[in-house]
Image (tube, rainbow, N blue to C red; front, side):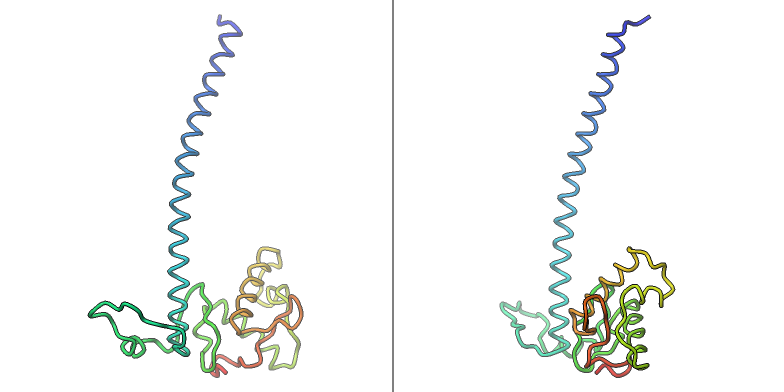
Length: 182
């Protein structure tokens, strides 16, 4: 029969091995996390740059300066000629400008605009995100409401919606139905 001290030493050794293994795994995960954060940062910067270029192409080209254009590169005229009239993006919301159609937005954003347009058309006031969630048939739980609030705030910052009172949203004055764009 093993002694109590011997059993304790075995358990201590097993625990030490487990700690060492977990530390190695934590170091590996930290290194992987650092690489993933770097990649995420690079993609975020790339998305922001593409968004800025697409916004500049859709509106005035003021502020876009081409420097050190390599020989054989695409000219600004070629870019403007090939630029789509409507920019579709999944998570990026285009900045509203005269003539920009709702189809430039993803379906979720279009749905919010349509609900708020119905309110304006019926002469009703702004909606809260809880009311939007209920109107969409969603569970009115914090996660859903905050998701809608995030989208609504993004639409406000891009000029599609107005927030006349905190947490209450309506269409911006210049924005009209999906066909109009202005």
